[in-house]
Length: 140
Length: 472
Image 1 (cartoon, rainbow over the protein chains, first blue to last red):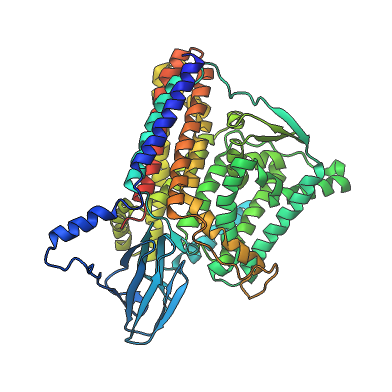
Image 2: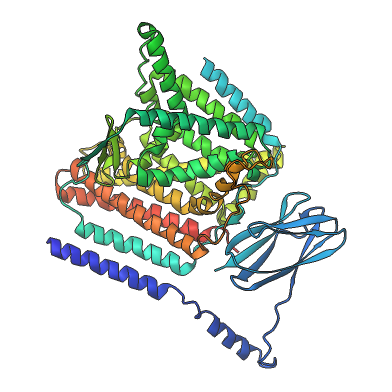
C-alpha cells in the first residue's frame, strides 16, 4: 500500500469516527420531546397545562441505618432535588459532594431541597453511624 | 533476617487489624462516584476499537520502527538536581508519614491517605506518561540509600562490601507481588483509609526497600524489586523523555518500553497491573454484587465474621481476576506460538509483555482519572492543614473540591478516549515487535491476529467495566 493510500485510509477512518460520535451522541433537547408525547397520549385525562408533580421520596432511617436498604434517588442535572429523610432517632444527615447537612430530631423528618448543579453519584450519610442511607444519582 | 522479621510484623498488623471496620469495598475518601458510561458511548467505543484495529492491520509499517530509541540529545542534567529532588522526596515522605501518625484519624481530613492513594498512586501514572520517570528523581528510599552510600563511601571507601548477585529467577516478581499487595491494601484491607496504619505501612515498605538495596545494590534492587519504582518506570517508558548517563534525550514515543530488559516476572507484573484495576472495576458492577453473597456464605458457615468473610472473598476475587487476565494473555501467546513453532511460548510471552503496558495505563486512567480530578483537589487544603488540627500553613486550608472542574460527560470521554488510545498504542507495539521476532512480514502479520484478539478482548473488557459500574 502506498503512503498516500495509507494516509487516505487513516483520514477516512478519522472522519467515520468523528461522524459516528456526533450521530451517536444524544443532543441536549432530544430526549425530552418524545417522553412528553408519550405521557400525554397514555394519560389523556390529566389537564395538559399542569405537568404531574413527582412524588417526594421519603428515606427512612433508624439508629443511623437505612430502613429497607439504601434508597436510590435519581435526578437530572439542573433539576430541583427534593427528598425527605425521616429518622426514628436523632441524627445528622449529610450529602457528600454537595456538603449539605441537616439535623433530624428524634422521630422527626427533614426536607432537602436544592438545585442539582453537580453530576455523578453522591452518598447520603447518617453521621451518627457513618452508614450510607441513600444514593443520590445526578445524570448529566 | 531483619527483612523477615519486618514482614512477619507487617503481616501480624494486617491480620490483627482486620476485624475492626464495617464491611464494604470502597474508599472512604471518595465523595463522588462515577456514573456508568451511557450505552451510545459504549457502542461508539467498541466500534472505534474494531475500526482502529482493521485500519491498523492495513496501514502499519513493514519494518520495525520502535525497537531503537532514535534519541535526540537535549540537555545535560546537573547532578545537583538529584540531590535537591531526593531531599525534597525524603521531606515529602516524612511529612506524609508524620501527618498519618500525628494527625487526625479522619481519612478525609488527613494528608496521608489522599497523597498516597490519589496524588502518588494515580497522579504519578499520568505524570510519568507525559513527563517521564519523575518518581525516580524523588524516590525517598532510593534517595536515602544513595545519601548513605555517598557518606559511607567518604568515610570508609575500602570497607564497603560488594552487593550480592541479584537472583535472576526472582526478576521482577517482587514488584508484581508489591503491586498486588498495594491494591489489596487499597481495596480490600478494612483499615485502608486509616492514616496511622498507612503511615506505618509506608515506613515498613521503606525499611524493606532499604534492606533490599543494601544487599543487592541500589540500582539493581530499584529496577527490579521496588514496586513503586518499577510501576512508574514502566509508564514513563511510554513517554518521549529519556534520561541516560546524566543527559536528557527526546526519543520516539513508545520506543522506551521496547528497551525493557527481559527478566523473570515481567509478564506477571503487567498482568498484575491490569488485573488489579480490572478487579476494582469489577467490584463496582452487578456481577460481583450478585456473586459476593455466594462467595461469603461458605465462609460465614465456617464461623467467620462478616468482615473476615468479605475480606477472604474479595481476596479470592482479586486473585481470580488477575489469573483470568494472565490466562487471556497466555491464550494470545499460545495462538502466536501456533503460527510458527520456532519460538517457544515462554520466550514469546516475555517478548510481548511490554505491549500490555499501554493497556495498563489506559485501565489506570479509565478507572482513576475522576479520583484524581476531584479528590486530587483536596491536596490544596490538606497541605495547609495536614494534621486536620485547624492550621493554615500555606493559606489554602479553606479551599474546597469543585465538582464542576470536569463534568460527568467529560469524565466519560477521558475514560473511553484513554482505552481507545491505549489500544492503538498496544497494537503498534505488538506489531513492531512481531516484525523483529518473525523476520517474514507475512508470519508477523499472521501472528498478530492473535494479539489483536487479546487487545480487543482487553479493551472491550475495559469498556464493559465502565458501562457496568455503579448500575441503578
